[in-house]
Image (cartoon, rainbow, N blue to C red):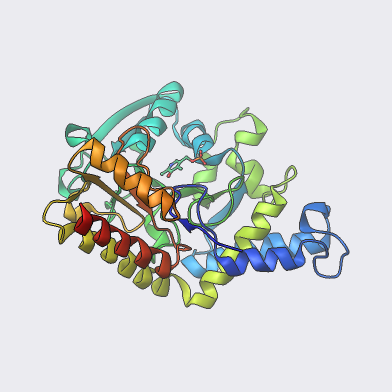
Length: 360
Ligand SMILES: *Cc1c(COP(=O)(O)O)cnc(C)c1O
């Protein structure tokens, strides 16, 4: 068996240990004679899996008691609509900070639900930076402020979060949740599709401060109302059981790793291996993101010509590297190095980049 050097942006690499455990339990989970996929979601065995995943996420991120952890479906994209449907009251205005394609998509959905405004944008320079916290236009009467903590496509990441005072800060953390410690009490709501840092696609994590549940209007479609999922422990209908099971395994892996602080250290190491290769290349490789805004999760770069980029990508593919093409909206190259990307894969890529430069 040969495992690929997987740099996919999402769905992305999962820890090998997690896959092996799932493989070993696939035909007979916990002595049930069934896989987790075949269990009733109302069974004791599944319920334990479900609650354990919730508990572990709470423990790893230090989620306070006044927050609810929800497992929903529809991806981060569905949260683009659920957030304004539940939290943007009539006559209120939601403040969106635009730092890339995903925040623009979030805004587009919010515009259908109510009034919005843009408190800052990095569109003026192809989203290669995170706006200065002091430059954000924040108003005390905003319904909420929405940001994207890591811009998967452009390779930028918020290093510090704005202090929005009494206005809830809503964060799309799809591509960097669990990559570093967080002070959850600073946020009103966090959401993340699982397929980058948490597990497989199909399950979306929502962490919501419980008082915000009261904002949802009456007569919401049941499945789109956060209260439905909060009041039924995310089991109003059939949850994505296998995805939640794998999420639980990824969380247990992070715990064995030493938790998010330990993961952050390794993430910093992995990112610096690639950024150093870029910075020490005399301009052969050009990073897309400003140095102060560089993402630890998605390393984006260009070569001096499109032709050379094509050659780089073709030879990288030949050498067993997967997923290095930049997103179709900006081109170039992107290495996604989420929690589960092994240091050895990143080292192999770094070496490949050095060799390619020497030969070209
Ligand atoms: C991948 C991604 C999304 C889209 O997630 P889906 O689960 O496919 O809807 C949204 N936001 C960010 C930051 C992402 O990286």
